[in-house]
Image 1 (cartoon, rainbow, N blue to C red):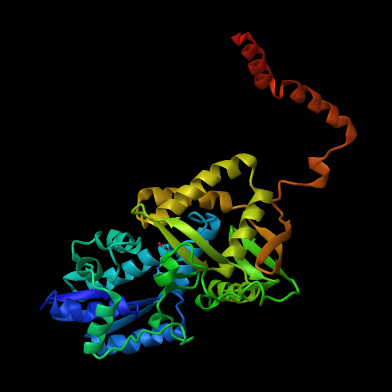
Image 2: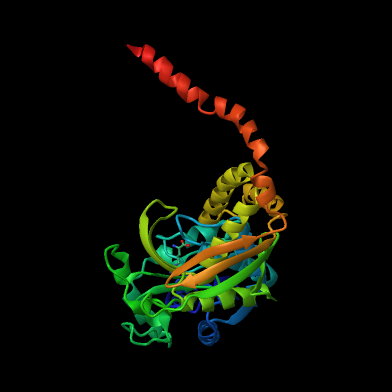
Length: 401
Ligand code: ARG
């Protein structure tokens, strides 16, 4: 009795994987696992309906709290961003993979499977976690290179319809020509015409954010408080992490905040055109970075930039089990001990602008920073040596001739 556990999203690729694992790979039992990291309710419901039809058994894991506390909040502390991408998909993959592994070990499965193709980053992120076990790793999409059309036909033969729909069905992303990956932190849209970097995305690809034109004229003020680098309240009201992120996505989205259209350097080396929506991420990252600038020393800030970047690269590559990742988090957590305070933002027409900040740990005070007149003279000695090496260089260059 050969058993395989599949990371299942409910979309075309992973749905096609289920019969393929039986018919092409010879597995007797396919267990589909869907991990809830804040996908739309509709998508989760669809995944359940399809999995119950196609697979032998279906497991749904609610990982929303875990996603917020173990992935999103560490990202905020690390100002996580890869070339401007807020890493939503990248962070979710290892978490999903870990839950799939857990089910596989519990069920005594022989293999692990995912529906990633051989072009993207996700295959690497899944594989990296899957290979921490000695179970077989199967990636039918990477191994069989089927076209979308072939997949649709194959799905139909197994009683699952994924009609091609050219964007008219507003409620069903998964059927559309775009490939969408959505969780609480970001929504990513790629594929089809969007693969042409020159193609301007039609408004219909966006679901979370209003266009600049649609966004209200009237700005909205927002107040976010942080404790140890983590957001804890909005406009003075304490919020649970999941609720806080949902709320900021709604408010920010209304103002058209957090749209990214970018060229991205994938791990394999090729450039890809990517479109993202992430209002809460934009707001929280703007606010957090600003608060750090009030609180951390210049030395801490400069060094932390390097750490933040290394952190983001590891997350992008799906190498969060590298011991370096733990070490970077330890450093980051140390710096965040003092990152308590409140940031004031103004949201308007696609921009979240910080308009004020305060903290009991601020390294700024009007009294201390600009002290009484008599002390200004002491700067003269400092100033005498400032630029000393530059002056000396100019003089020695004079000796060239
Ligand atoms: N390029 C991003 C990443 O590597 C997002 C990929 C999301 N996939 C999708 N089908 N939209 O994390």
